[in-house]
Image (cartoon, rainbow, N blue to C red):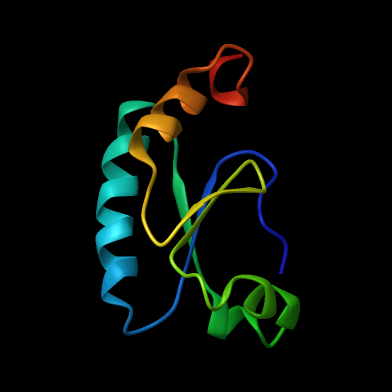
Length: 93
């Protein structure tokens, strides 16, 4: 399993209420910047990428920005807005 190098990925797992809330918040922020959110269930992805679940499974929800861990357990909204608005971000090029 390969995460996208540009964009926002939310790592989740089924039955995670925090993941549902994080997806709602993340979707709202990303809509402001016209950025799509890709959702990846770490348990489903484990068949192809067991390292993904091993690395992030105990911290879901996890937000990856451009393939790099940005926040976990909750969306860091002010930081995400600042990072997405940053000049030079692929979305702003």
